[in-house]
Image: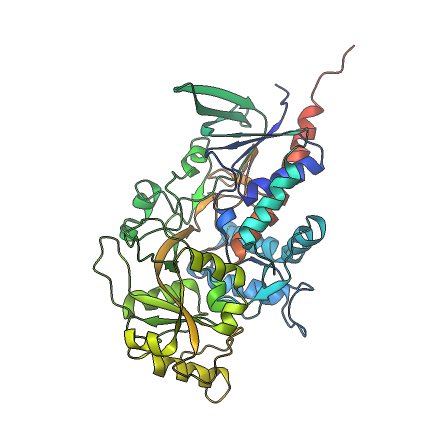
Amino acid sequence: MIPSTVIVVGSGLAGLTTTIQLLTHRIPVLMLERFSHPGGNSIKASSGINGAPTPFQPVPNSDSVTAFQADTVTSAGEPLVAATGAERTRRQNLIETLVENSSGAISWLADEQGIDLSRVAQLGGHRFARTHRGAGKKPPGYDIVSTLLGRITGDELFRMETGRRVTKLLREVGGQVSGVEYTFVRDNETVVERAYGPVVVASGGFAGDAQGLLAQYRPDLAGIPSTNDRREGTQPLLQEVGAAVVDMEQVQVHPTGFLDTKDPEAPVKILAAEALRGEGGILVRGDGRRFVNELEKRETVTRAIMEQAKELPTTARQWDVNLVLDEGTAAALQTHLGFYTMKGLMRQITVGDLAEEMPSLNEALRDYADVVSGKTKDSFGRQSFGNWTLTKVQPESKVYVGKVTPVVHFTMGGVVINERSQVLERQGRPIPGLWASGEITGGLHGQNRLGGSSLLECVVFGRIAGDEAASYYRGLEGQCPVPS
């Protein structure tokens, strides 16, 4: 059967990037989204997207592809170190593809899509400032996703159907994937339909699948809130057609999700963007004592919180930690602060008033001020302080504070792909007609993903998947019999 379209499953950044590439080649696209609104978790991304080297990075800029790759390898840790042979090569190829295309991804978004990425911050696990976001009022995830949605809306070759839950991939006797089966509700009845064509799966991870895949692979995380809405993981759909999975037990617990004091037991938390710490913010325990280098890798900061902060007496597993910003840090994060204060997640307060709640806060702030001003070295090893300007701590000095706690955030595991975004069988062979990109995939980030690399992964491998699927589709078109 000659397909009439390429099917893209998922409308987050990976799916949108894939779609734009396909439309650039003038290939028709059917996008299937299981929820009523497009954007996936990508639309909630709040820190930015990595790239190196780029013209937006601070001058002079010593960052490089080599440095970015080294940081990614270090962050990936044991899964990469322990891998051997073809598996080690595959992982290394994924990392190289990611970092070598990072500068091009920033240029594609900024120059071709018109997205502002002019502000750059240094996040945890990075040796340089390379995480890009805009200077305007929109958070980076929303800005990027909404812009790309606008690019494809109205294109005659594009059709999106929301509320469609893909339940099956169709695989032919010859081995190729030839379409999907999906369900939706119409007039209170469940309807089953099929669509035919090559398939790109960009349906995200399983960090919100608390009763399903998360419980299967990481039962020890039960009770920890998540930044993800409750949704089932879709890796099993690809496994049913022979796809291999890897690193499924590697789940990232982000150190800072906001604990809303009005609803402390909420199972889904709003992420406290890593940029808040990257631009100078510090973490203190309930007593006001600082206890960690806030720019360490996410897993390191999370471990420090769980080991050194008091666990709260709530049904959910949560810890007593506060995020504190000075006015300089807040000024660099106006978009974030406006949203967080509107939601009641952060509040402005004087140091004197806050110290009444946290008896060790004055000492922590004065020590940090001395470090920022160069009088002493940080006992926790922090070397970058963003836009922190409070170097003379007075009772009337103003700060911003919000309660935070570790949250299940991202799943590094998923279906196995190669550097061409092709989904691989357990024997390492590509499954014809099937690609994947974004958090549905595994093996790139190992045991810890660097902040800012999730959006980057979506753009880099989404573009690759789009180009690869376009080429495959053209090949199928060429099989059409020529009329006599």
